[in-house]
Length: 142
Image 1 (cartoon, rainbow, N blue to C red):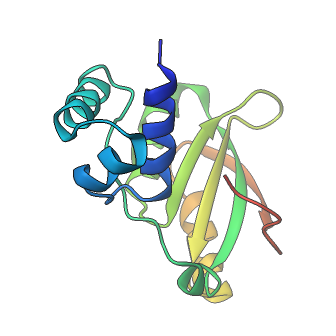
Image 2: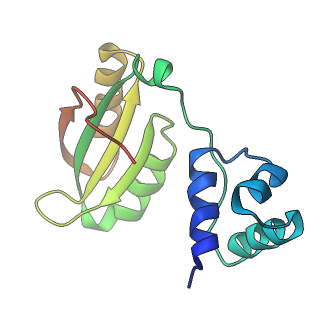
């Protein structure tokens, strides 16, 4: 169970994971050692898995994003998932219910690169068919 202080700490780190321990301590009105202990505990218990680079809006606005629904041959699901994980332009992969088995969120630097990427995904051993939807505009993201 997370305390209110843990929730506030996580909220600050989600905004800027590079915030210094000293700044976190000041923002939370806690000692530096208390903040460090909380972060260590959150990491050890798996609440914090890691820290990532988030692209800047200027760069993201140049990318072409798409959601790709993927139907997979059931016997090749594990192999297909491993192969999809190796494609760096796939930022997220979800198992879903319904007609398709997976949804991949992909980002390419151009529509031409996106087209090649969609071909690569469709040609993977185990992929029966795909259906893509290009993201025209992001209304909000949390």
